[in-house]
Amino acid sequence: MYARPTDWVFASTKLKGTNPRCGSIASQSYLYPAAAKAGVLHSVEERNRVRIRYFDMAGNPVIRWGWHNLRHSLASWLVSEGIDVNIVSSMLCHSNIKTTLGIYSHTVGSKQLAAQGQFLDTSLCNAPVQ
Image 1: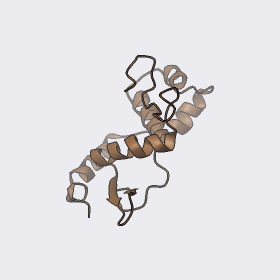
Image 2: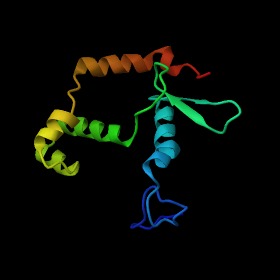
Image 3: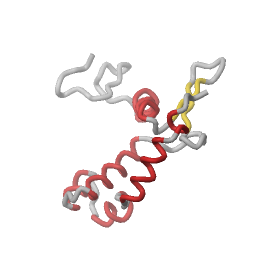
Image 4: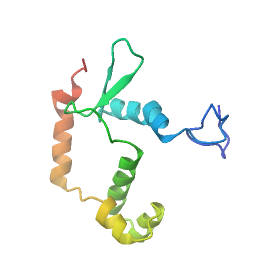
């Protein structure tokens, strides 16, 4: 509906595209379903309600998971790929590189990646959600 280069990616239909949708609504409409499709979260439709609740793969309700997690993931990935830390810090609008390196970027070693891959290959992740 809002496809011009100057339009918002997640435009508010209520505001006729003049502003983005608020973060929580965009999370519910786009981010959580995409995460569920990717196997990061799973959803359960509550009976007698039009509401879907999301859970992590251990079955815990998702309380704090959203756009901010993507900032941490982006920072970690960029740093691990050898992108100059000043560029990463600038992309995330950090005024201090210590924020980028000390808080946002996380070391992900080959053993961690292998463990995550093994987890994703298990039947737990691939089992249908009830």
